[in-house]
Image 1 (cartoon, rainbow, N blue to C red):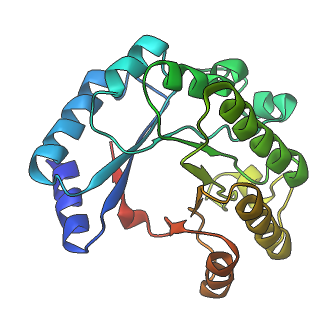
Image 2 (image 1 turned 180 degrees about the vertical axis):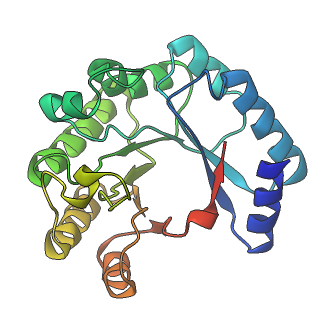
Length: 225
């Protein structure tokens, strides 16, 4: 009921796309539960496109999801640098670097054709991360003949209780951030570039001018599963 109320308010705002995100813990949000949520939203708000961001799935699970009438399936690698990734995810469901890295392969093989890639800027050198993201997109395009529908480039944001977020290992300056957007726009001309970070209006305006096509800066735009 709480989720449907959120979707109702978002629908009133005229928004035509919602990102449903359920994190990486299927014990908290089982796949069947996510399916029920999607079905209920589609029944009442069939003009809204539902993008999905959940944990990496098996090929068999992707076959199920491919029949759910969703838009884009998003997986944010966070960091392509394996040592940096392992430092952030030493244990738990996200600790398997390669499971996450090859999650898009499984998605495509399971019938999901619209997918999104992403990096979390601040965990490692942005040059390495951007080149790796581009190479990942090239690898998938060469292997399967399709490229990413979207790429997401959030920056680490300061969160209360997290020293790491206040002092990222690799701080990205505004000028560098805008350069990242411009590079991705040039290399991936047909891909949606999503700006999910709470940037200033000035930076957001320039970001849209140099390549961003979608912003998710307002937390009210999320329907949390």
